[in-house]
Image (cartoon, rainbow, N blue to C red; front, side, top):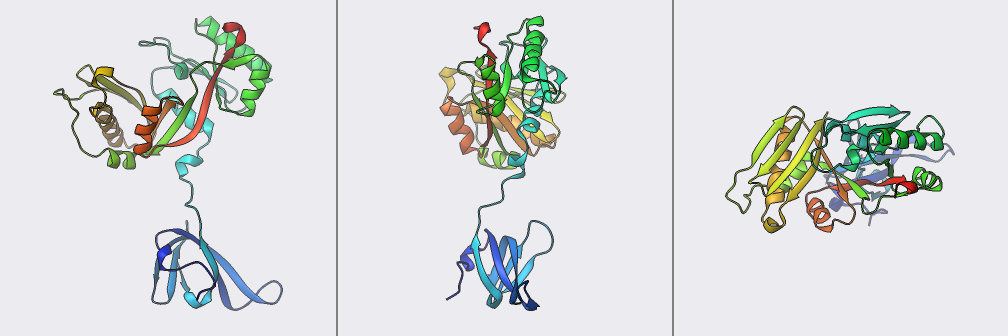
Length: 302
């Protein structure tokens, strides 16, 4: 019976292993121990082999293991990206103008197609605006009013910035809270798999530099933009009369395929927090919530 919870069943999982170091003494004069953290790649022939996040694999004789246990997987590097850095990829989706306000970013879409979208016509209020919050809020309001847009600031949901702006009289824009979802492009592509939508129309791809649009017979469409190795997906819509026929997945398949051709490795998108069908779709494709955001506007604008 081993004095630990490790065994052959931990192969392929992340573990921490404490082992005895023969011939060495610890700080108090007793035996010396060292810990190894990584993926267990083998448990055979009297050895446990652990591959750390960096460096060479470590082979540990089972007789020298003092303690150990499985540990949660290391968070995806994508999920460790800051909220600000993740949201800055928005600027690549369309031809929008951006103006810095310290670390904040004023975003403006001069010629919107269809409805005026919040994330293209609001200030990204994450980081330090390099001035008092009250002054920053006044500058944001003036900036958008000069451009005939409602003043809006996008903040991380339940953040200190949201609390401070609400104390200044800014209030949530109704029905616009959203999740920023993120996923491995390769995993999304694998989970989408093959398949054809229930329509005779062939997907039509319209490419324009770092952006692309997919149209399926006028009943479904989606758009995407590339920024470095990040693919941002937006405006995915299906005519209500044609839903549940695989059209959303078909449009996504084209967008993801195009992104892979451009060298993208990460896919992201915004989904409103109350859009349960979309959230279910993306959850099944491997997307996870990176953060959630809220749009605020001056109470006087209501």
